[in-house]
Length: 208
Image (cartoon, rainbow, N blue to C red):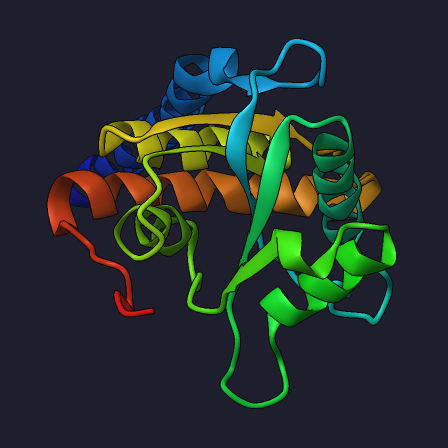
């Protein structure tokens, strides 16, 4: 009898948790999708576009389409004049891995002038990238450039802190890579809610 009650409680808790996770995901999307644009004609001009970092390669060594598509989107936005500067914000290990450098090189290879690109090498998480843009680079108005699901989370963070941000959507990847990223995004949005409403998490580094 006790075992059945425990089992029912565990099942009930799991079901409630799953429903909450799904509702949380949808809430973030519905809250921010009107501020994320697919068309360069309809998005407004901002001086700076922030390209959120990711690795150029996936775990098995293949090219990361998320990375490539963010670069394509950033170049497109720059070349049509909807941003004047690009701030690449990603993580680095202080040694050989540097997302900012990798994104900078990719942008230059696509025709973006080097003097139009700035790098933030302490964008370890999306929260860090957004708050460092405000507190270190003194930006309170900018365009985020990433995939739609990532943009929605970045915008939610920005708007939570009163930052005037919009986003331009890069294309997603395909197949399992895309499915895995969307699955991981559920966890990222839960962590974001904890960061914003419970833990009061600050960026790992708040110096230039």
